[in-house]
Image: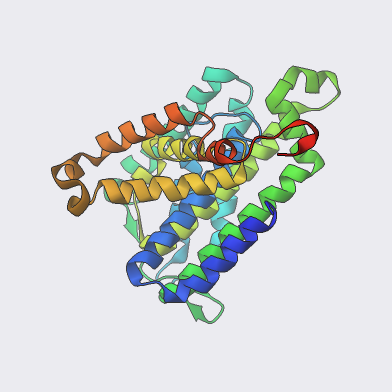
Length: 317
């Protein structure tokens, strides 16, 4: 049932897509893009044990690569997405080759430093339009299909999310995924067993960067504009909170976290619900997440385990 649940949710979303109004369809697209971004970080944090505070750099680079490569005519979406993933993966290769030689808090700080370097390149130079960012003049096309249609964009993002989730599910079940799990538990023992842990971690880092670039590319197509804030440490913190909120170590936790995090931001910033507190939604969001983490240390995924029937000997309830 656990294996079938993601497919059932994707099918339900595909059926409900045309029935949703513009607001809800756009909100669901936003959730799905954040889910891809969170899944890319889950590959590092949950599957490999590498906590990064610079993951937004790859997200922003993917977004900027899409806009810069689109030109005045929009271009081909597949080419732009592959270019965005390639640019993000290339930067991830450079960052990972250096940062993975450190551990713990030093790794966190080095990834943050590289992200801030990328942030200031786009913020303080004319490459990315400075602090104002740049606009996507014309949305790219997918074959003969125009992405000006919200239904086309919806199904594109849904397909990208399903592909990302399926890919990472296969990775988890592969020898590569087993090696990453071993590195997360005890890297020293994995090295003693003959595994080149540095190469495995670098491969995971580059793959995570490419998937974050895919999320950034989709965001650029959705919004039609990008700015340096996409590369800021705030964005890295948001996606890390998303993974923690959903439950680290679970792919579905990244998606659940994206859903809840987005809905919390929408609800807490709505004046009709929160009144004057809506102007201070960052404060109420922070307090809410603190409560969630305190009550559910294993994330929202752990809530289902708490509410489920107790498991006795022999694996039976």
